[in-house]
Length: 157
View 1 (cartoon, rainbow, N blue to C red):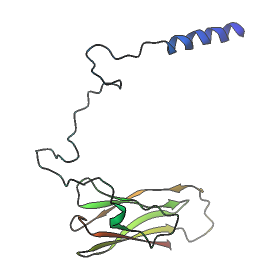
View 2 (view 1 turned 90 degrees about the vertical axis):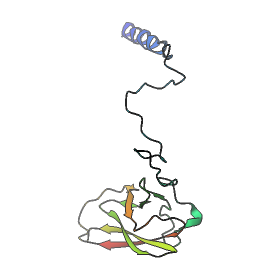
View 3 (view 1 turned 180 degrees about the horizontal axis):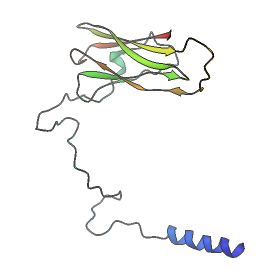
View 4 (view 1 turned 90 degrees about the horizontal axis):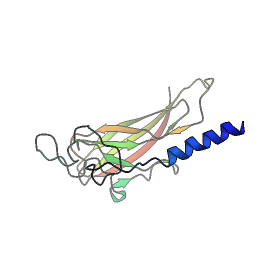
């Protein structure tokens, strides 16, 4: 038993002492080398056209009206990569499912209703976990400087 433990310690010490420095010519990166193709930067689309500069970025709090959401609800949204919609963080739990409904788009605001749908029967066994999915919302035009208004509702199916 002691001899087996000593052998294991020798093996582990050898692994810890292994030289993990990059080989010559590997450059300054200490991470693994990937042969994956290089993707364009977020502001550059394939073919050279520029995407919306803030695509994929979070909506600033000054542009987000989440006052109608419950106190413990996430207050986070971002523009999608294409710039023509949103990804809004919702909350769901147990057997419930979150969805997003575009209520209204005007020149000054976009209103989205976040719906949490739960089973009506009450006899279904459900987990007690809370999840925060990002829900896509397609807009007629980019959000721009309009205010994003978030509301929440619970429904039974």
